[in-house]
Image 1 (cartoon, rainbow, N blue to C red):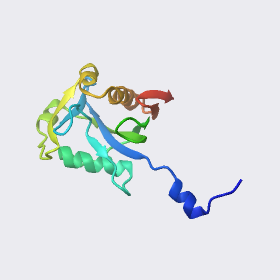
Image 2 (spheres, one colour):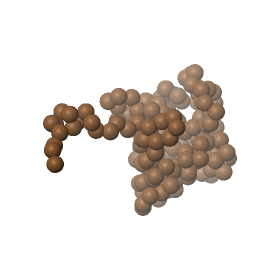
Image 3 (spheres, rainbow, N blue to C red):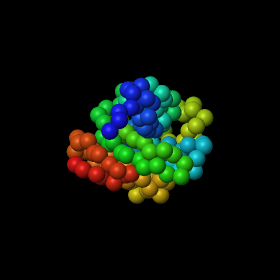
Length: 162
C-alpha cells in the first residue's frame, strides 16, 4: 500500500459544512423560532459557521446579529450529522442551550437584521409545522437534553445514541 505524501493527504481530507443554533424556551416548553426573510421554513436563532469560526462562537455571533442577545450560550445540547442532499454537502449541526426566555422578553427583542422577519415562542407541535422535519426532530431532542442536562448525538435529527 502506497501512502500519499502528507500535504497531499491533508488536501484530500473531506470538508464538512457546520451550523450552530441556540435553543431558547419558556417555562411551558415553548421554543423560540425566527422567521427568515430568505427561505420558506422558520428556524432557530443561529446560522452557518464561518471559516475559522468554532460553533460556540457562531452561536453567540448569530444570536447577537439576529436578536440583539449578547449573553453567551450555555452547554452544547445536540450534535447532529447532516447527510448530503440535493443542495448541500454533508455537515454537522450544533445546538447550544440559551436557557429560558419569557414572552415579554421575546416581544421586547429589537430585530434589526434584515434576514429575520419575526421571532415567536411556539409549542413543539406548532414548531413541527414551521420547520424542516430534520430540524423539528433535532429541536425536540435539544429541549429534552436541556431538561436532562445531557448531550444528544443525532443522525439527521434522529437520536443515534444516548
